[in-house]
Image (tube, rainbow, N blue to C red; front, side, top):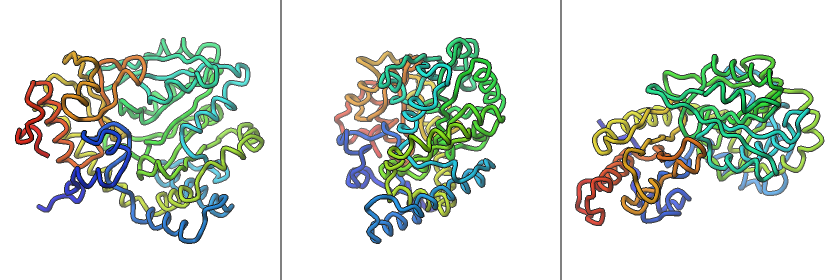
Length: 401
């Protein structure tokens, strides 16, 4: 059997390409920032190149925005059976900017200074988001079980009491959980009962594996559609974060009316090349994406095997979505912290779980969207470091890539 094309990518090639993931810690293997090593769909590259070749480097033409809106609406319908008016799709430069907009403009109307509620562990930049606006934040730790992660419902109810802005990341970065319809309906009921609102970050929604199904939060009930704003983007699934384009989905008419007054400046942040690339991704990239998901599906299961062989004290549940592995390394007691230990001793760059808020201590986040030989090399190195092998010995088979 011939090797998968992704398996032929080498560390030297990845470093030569110059991505942040592979140049920030140049002497290490990059598994920290959430970008893939697989490029993007051919149609996306062609669309980006055509945009530049045509000299579209000024302000975004209306048609370019309209094309993106139509493509996004079509994608959401085809992929998730979510039917929306294309005008409900608003361009922004990132999901983080969408959260800023939600904090500034879409908090509960009776409590405009409402706290942010985060289900933790959470995406690192969201931990500090509230403080930028003088808001409080409340962290509700998820419960780890033998089969996955569960919400602590009584703690969530308490956090939402009085009205709050719940940040719901689904699929959940970093733990890889994909919320069920039953869970989403229960969340919606709590939000309604407390007069709260929801910011739904669904940027990883295309990256879901067999056995789980992504359900857009706004589709679970009319109430959920009315009290939520949603952010999506092609940036994770099609590997486009540097092209600066995301989509804010407004499913409440009052929110749309307000956005028409305050949204002009933030909408200018979406780049022309990103608008064109997003349109191409949503219209022509399905085949490429499905092949990537198949590869990632194999990688998440392979990771369980090689962790069991080289890091048997590490606990790992394959994620239901995303390309992020959340590894419980607490039984290893690594000093001064697990990510720092593995960077120094194994030359593998990871994210420290403590930066993801409450419940993250003793964990690391590992990005497995990399060639499988490289993924194997990462775990070999980490295992050798824990076992005390000589990590300077290039001939040590633990370090073979």
